[in-house]
Image (tube, rainbow, N blue to C red; front, side, top):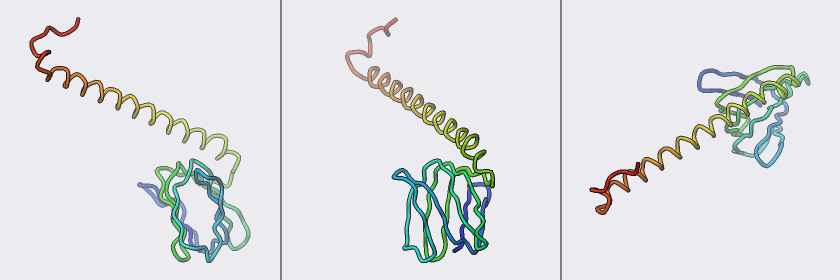
Length: 138
């Protein structure tokens, strides 16, 4: 199989002769072997591991993304990825950073939505005929 892992800015992994891929989606961990059926899933923030034809394992921390299996190709598109053969470092440091950034983005998105709704409520309040001439609260 061929494994390709890309981010918007770079190709992180382009490996031929891959014998096994282990990844994780929200339902849990799964494996892909040569001859796997076509497959598409959304990945969790996790470490993707693959074994080459010499039996050596390699690892990449991925910040979610999409994994597809088409023919003999396994393709991962992710927002961010870090490749390293130091599995412990990936699990302890890199995934923690990915999760923290993801949580910060979610919090910012929630706050943005809250402000957006408050603005809409204010516009609706000002457009009501009974409040057009009333003094704003104060």
